[in-house]
Amino acid sequence: MTGVLIADDQELVRAGLRTVLERRDGIEVVGEAADGREAVHEARRLDPDVVLMDIRMPVLDGIAATRELAAAGGEGRPRVLVLTTFDLDDYVFEAIKAGASGFLLKDATPDRLVTAIHAVEEGDALFAPAVTRRLVERFAAAPPPADPDGPIGELTERELEVLALVARGLSNAEIAGRLVVSLPTVKTHVGRVLMKLGLRDRVQAVVFAYEAGVVRAGEGS
Image (cartoon, rainbow, N blue to C red; front, side, top):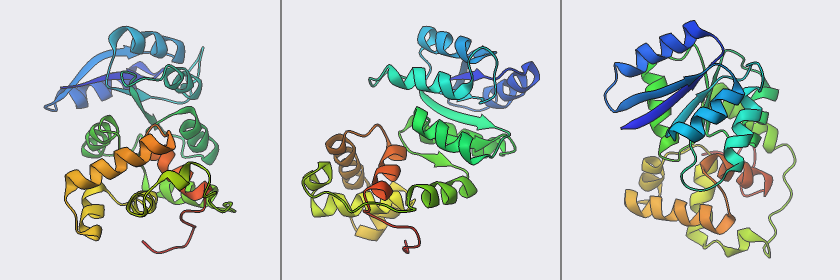
């Protein structure tokens, strides 16, 4: 069962999201919050797996709240899925830097929302397609060459290959098919990449790969 905390300053939105999610097997809405400060408090008290976080909220906005939750560190902290009506670059990039694991617009279908919740809970990055394209372009504008003496030098050739495919948006299943290996093998490689590079999740892996010049904008997948 995936525990979800809904953080949004509009009561009608919270009620709608609760109705949608409570009809789905495997998801339990454990609580609600009407502002960012309450979201942080309730997340620490209720220990949800995923927080659905609005950006524009009073007292403390969603980005600042996400930053506080991410700063706690550890395996037990919740994943944050930003759910907003505002498809603006500054919000997207600030949310990612703050520690969000996904960014979805509120016009997403219920099925897409449920898929996103499960994806971020499992450690995958989840972004609307248009957001993903701009994310890549933003962080790939002028990447420096990878430093062989830095963390990237600790990766094996296969791990470097897996990192590049993750950065291009391939799922674990797609990577397994591309490399002709089993799904558990891919998951092991991804886990080792994150551990060696000191990264939290696939979101940070994508950003790292483009910033380090492992992949560049315009390269084919």
